[in-house]
Image (cartoon, rainbow, N blue to C red; front, side):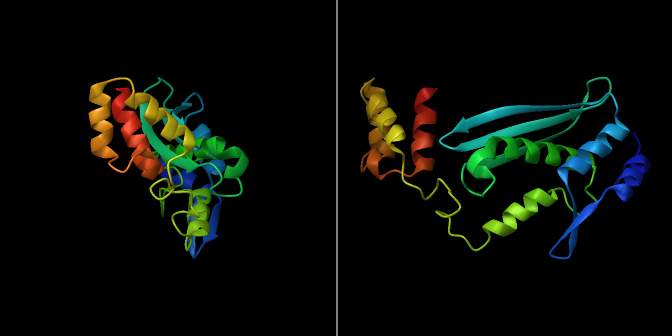
Length: 186
């Protein structure tokens, strides 16, 4: 595949105007990829899905299965109207769009897709809590219970939790609780 071939397909991709800038939609990037690599592959993997937050990695490969580009995406359940019911699917679509963008498809002006930018614009002006950011949301009851369970498993766990949650697990944010749980599960 040559850069000229990618430029030619990019010239035919429909773009959406958002705030005066043109962005390609993911479905158009996928169609362009299929034109350039009819036997190529688009693969996705759910990296994590915990407490309503998922991370998906997508990779695109050529006809011989060589990975050409990858992309990651992160979505929070309920952070947008579509994410109330389809945050995992939305995350997968974003990851595919980013991987294709890194390959150069639909990336004349930006790697992010029209859908990604629209989501970002919609969340502008919202507080971190309104965006569902775990850095400010309190730890869930499930997280607190799990940390309490880990606390009772060993003296090492007790020391770690006392050091990293001096006010007790009830005072942790979701992000802090996730960090403690992740560290102690290893």
